[in-house]
Every structure is written in C-alpha cells, then in structure tokens.
Length: 90
Image (cartoon, rainbow, N blue to C red; front, side, top):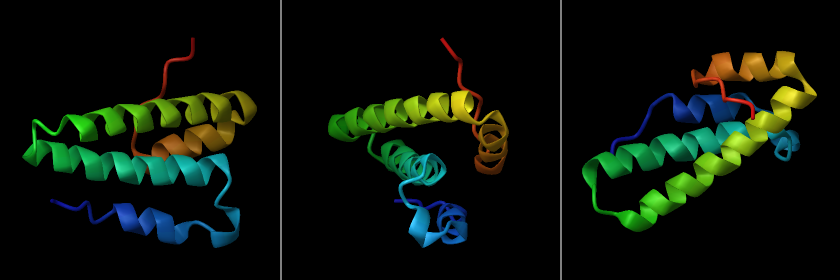
C-alpha cells in the first residue's frame, strides 16, 4: 500500500482534546479516504473496501455540509488546507 506522506502531518496539527469537532472528523475521514484510495489502486476488485470508501465519503460530505451551514469561514479554511473540492449544497 502506498501511503500519503502528508496525511499524518495534518492530524499532528490538531489538538488532541478536540477530537469530536467537525473539523477533526473531516480531517480523519480525509486521511482514511486517501489511504483507501491508494489501496484500491492496487486492489481493484476489493469490493468491501469500495463500499467502506463510499460510506466514509458520505459521512465526510454530511459533515462538510453541516460545517458550511454553521461556519462558512472555517469551512473554506478547512477545504483549502485539505485540498479537496467544495461540496454541492442541495
């Protein structure tokens, strides 16, 4: 499995006391998504991992929607720091 060297750096920046915050959860989901994506590049027929990836993507999408409604500034900062696309709001 190919590991992303930047994924651990983002988690070390976060405060350990604030693991329940939406930002921390989005960061941890993003790290898991990147790990699973690199795993699936090597193992294309691992359907259980594909299902897990889709579930994590949905959770992250819901958290990002919540964060964008609650605090748009923190949402924009998090999107820029993680280098992910902005979600479409329904």
